[in-house]
Length: 331
Ligand code: SF4
Ligand code: SF4
Image (cartoon, rainbow, N blue to C red; front, side):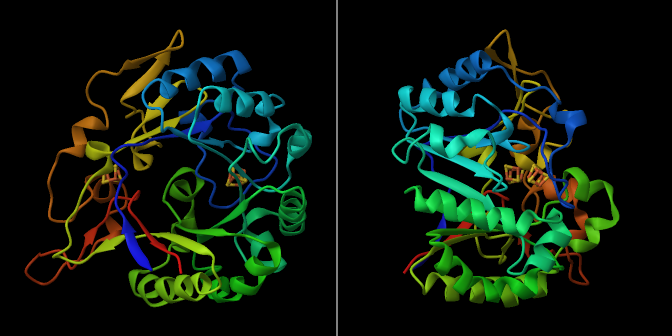
């Protein structure tokens, strides 16, 4: 069944970057130390900040991110604390290196998913994007996690370099025991925004002709597939998650964003000060969320106008959906 996953209005999603350092140097990494900080949060701070969001909802979901979050020696303590605080689900996004022996320090009752990042069905393609040896290590990490009873999902960031291998992912996913597959669109953030890697972005025609079909095929194997909606037909309604959903993207320098597209700029609407979450002054991301334009997402128009196309009379050919709007297919 295919459905557009509207933003969940009753849950709080906490995307918690507990550090920004990483052992890899992926070409399209969105982490921007100048804007996000280079510090490693002490466990006491992680616990205090998690407590703030746990109080907002008893259905909050937390995703631990980095950099590579398993490089944090106290990640296991953070996971146990998240469980104790009553988080509805706990996910760890990892490049597969699973540092600090993390999977022997937590158990499958405490982590809903280890979510692995792999950007190619072959070693050659993945390692070109993510670094030599990263394919083998990711596969080994998945096998180890699954053999210990953890649920594993996989994130595949689509670019011009690897779109042709999406159709080769199905047997690999099945073999690895993956039960959720996330296709991501390459964002013009972090490194991709600064370099010529803007050229890695997949054009609309390729996206529409490849992604939905590939997703359907993989879902046919009983794997739930999620991918960003990206483009809206003129008659489809546009909604900004910043106005109607509760997503928080936390960085180790204390900045808290509601919109991922704002993360390369000092546009955060909140910040932690002395472990208290306080609102920032104008201008911040909140000032953009309510602006209505025919092209859909305002931030997209500001930072990646090359995504847009117009007819000869100046009407947008399509709207750009909120980057947090997803299609989900499960059979
Ligand atoms: S593994 Fe993630 S955090 Fe590390 S370099 Fe790659 S994209 Fe960036
Ligand atoms: S991506 Fe666009 S639509 Fe989504 S939260 Fe940000 S500004 Fe709003």
